[in-house]
Image (cartoon, rainbow, N blue to C red; front, side, top):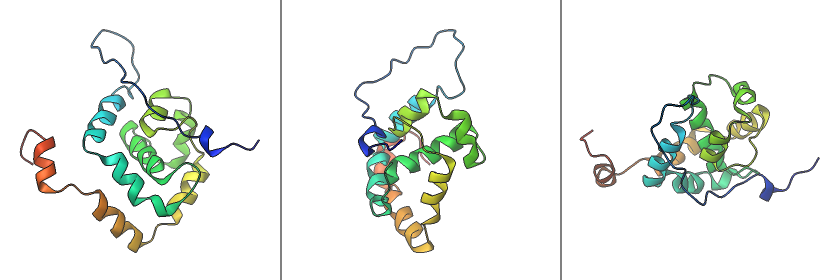
Length: 139
């Protein structure tokens, strides 16, 4: 089945309500708080700009956020995408309607060289003035 690029991406229009009540939550529930924090740092936009040349149907910025979410939930391998495939919070965090396969993410990662990683790293670091306005404590 052929999928359109538009069917892979998803806009996040509203905020999820965050309430502290006794419930059975997944360990991924903190992803929404992390998403809001990273959005405040303007990281998704900077990742999109840094990964614009990598191409792909899913978008480089969204795939970078997916890898970040895998670290957050404790995944150690790309194959662990199978276990989080149906989780709506991970899809929301990445801005994807459908998560890619491990093979797709692996192919995307293979295109990076030392030069692209240096350019990517410099465009995503925070300046000291921006860092002090976002983080209340000194780092």
